Length: 217
Image 1 (cartoon, rainbow, N blue to C red):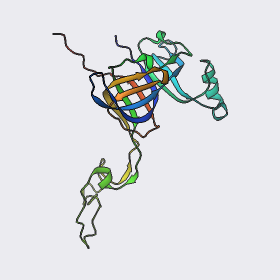
Image 2 (cartoon, rainbow, N blue to C red):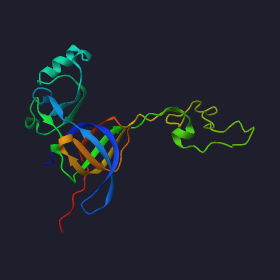
Image 3 (cartoon, helix red, strand yellow):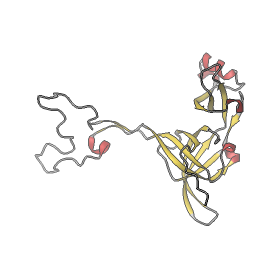
Image 4 (cartoon, rainbow, N blue to C red):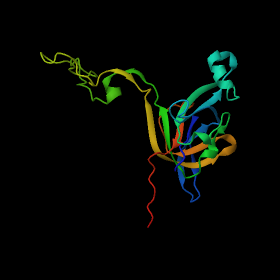
């Protein structure tokens, strides 16, 4: 059974490294963990099996009393981020344990969950890629979206119509990215390729759930 592990981290930025076969590979540097196990949920108590983890220490005067009490059970201080992942073996985790880069291995495939860069309120040209109208004088229709409504029936804008609105800031998952290198003393994962999100933003790294396994000859 493949171990189900998720870990919180922070996107540092992009760089490039040479592999063992002397190939230059673009990578994204992610600082992961160490994440503290704040709670272990079991079917007998909570109705399902899961592990709750925390990332990045927070000053005590900025945390609520409920937050402080919850963190105290695991023997750790308050944290800035809390996440939870399901597991089939909750007994493998204990309160106060630290989960870090040691849970991953070089060459392993992972999924990265992040939030795309927010772009604020945008028109249809930038948000949806509309080509716009004539650019000449007098057209009165340069970057508009065209007709939105209907005539007598149904007499309303249909749900899902592409219109101006807030762009970016969406949750996205990039699957089957390869770990090129692990720097354990700095808690860094060098992951091949890129994924959405600004530098310094929070990300979740998990073992790939749809990784293809090579068939035996």
